[in-house]
Length: 408
Image (cartoon, rainbow, N blue to C red; front, side, top):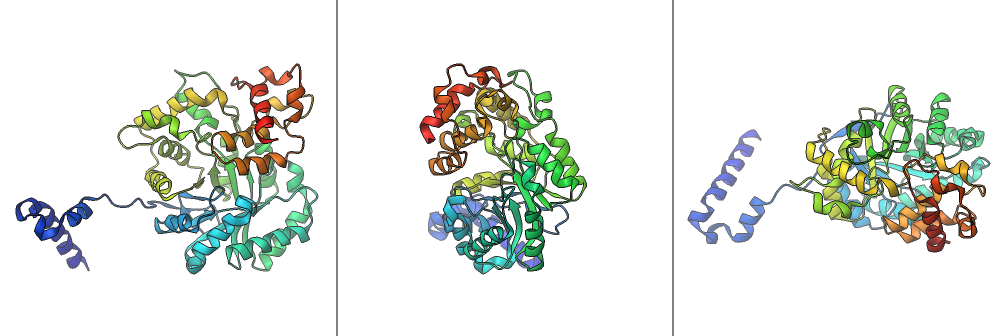
């Protein structure tokens, strides 16, 4: 095998060097182009996911905005082996696409899905949700099953969730259980789950804008503050205790197009943001929504090395300066005590982000509808107490009213 590889390299070298002398007729223009083409992007690092025994791609597939099996298959062919979905993504079509794309390679991939089990949810309804996901994914077992978007400790105190997950494990329908979170009380919920040994994996919103280390290093051009100093320590605790740590919401609002004029030398803002997250030794991997093959290829450019380069730091600084005062930090919740109408401000602004920044109005409207009255009280609030409640200066009343008009 080694001899054939060596001779192959020699022949390619000969063809490239001799093409101009021998002429295009020998090799053909298409052949020269193929030899000169850069290799396709691939996953370059697989990491242990806590104590689960799974080794997953450092940059893995998020499907909240995907219902195309061809996109899923492209990710698999690029080396991605961990696919994150949920019963409610694309109305279930996301799970269906993953099942269609991966059923014939099921033994080579890991599947994660989610259900939103409330504090009073019953085992029977949770099992129905799980069985629906299994059917759509065309599998007998889901590798990691999450309680989705946990923002209330009462949801983790629900004994029905614990009993359901234990039964599902015994029946072989799930292998590991976890929680995901990106809203208020995130750190409190994560600590409760760890205190009570309720999870094998956590999926948490985490990006450079939430990392105090970023703000300590880059403070020259902006003055907004990191609002979750307790988040990195809880991620460190999970890692120390053998719980898998997967990051999401890593792009701090995903306004990547804002950054195209500043990208140089092949480095993109998205790659810089991923590398920052993965440079934290307490984060095993990240998942990010992937909508098309070009996006997948760009994202995988950050797979492998974890060091953040100087140009990449410059991109993160520029992004933070441009967007820090209009991005609601996931899981902060500092402003919400100011509202006399108990509007879930951070949740409202998250749904608005899905519409304005992600361009996914269907997802935004579905999530907004689950908030009940949501931001409707903001439309008639004459003296909004929330106006100065954000330490980063986000114009809360303007944005919540906009959300109500867009999504209500």
